[in-house]
Length: 358
Image (cartoon, rainbow, N blue to C red; front, side, top):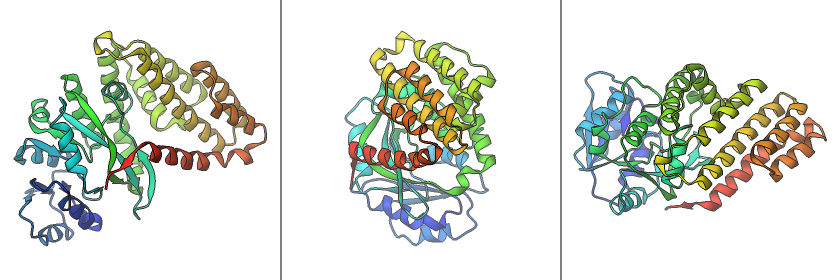
């Protein structure tokens, strides 16, 4: 765990780790020169498993993570942040899995909570290794918080890239995938990730876009042999994370590029065509919905109908888009209830497919 001025939620996070059902571990905490009372909070716990490493100067999280890689004594490393939570069986379930399967990294599904601890959504990692490979073209296939991985495997690829501020974990997983290490996901919801308002700051988004889009481009080239231009990698990132910001021409251009990437997956990865098709359809559905919700916000009813027709051409008949097209005929006032309803239904469905592991 890296800590920098994390006192607000630190006690909750520390106790979530200390109260794990698996008891035998070293709890290495890297204090990155906190100026609040974080260090005092850590020292208030009289637990021999806690080992505190205080940096001589503020290094930032990425360099502090590499300090942790260097200092950790165990064969496996588990990651937790100073404001997130872990359910009691997190380490036990992850450890059982990694020691009984031929994998180097095991991740978990996560509950996403707000600053008040209220459940907002479920963050699902891909269920299979094939899906994780495909996911790496669009996002990190691993939830960094809650992950468990082999120390030497991570060290062998150079650890975290210290030139990256936001996407260092995505960079680590990409390097490990390229070196042939295998990943897996446990089916339970084992952690809760706390999202903050400041995570959406313009400076942070710009940095994330530059780092993540570059990694996406690298992974696309590795999996498909396609070389995306710098402009296309930025549009690719926007297509996933800032869908509504793309105009109609840009959206169609990226959709065509994404489809070409799916069609160009190298045979050496042995990813089933059925898996590729399922992931392609599922992902495109999410992106089309994001674009439609942006149009609802901007009162672009005609474009919503065009998007529903475009989705049918791209991925086939889907009742959701038939419904949206019908509602569009009733006016934008009716459509405005869709984003809220969709979010609640998606949360309910995701919750029903997973197990909360207390």
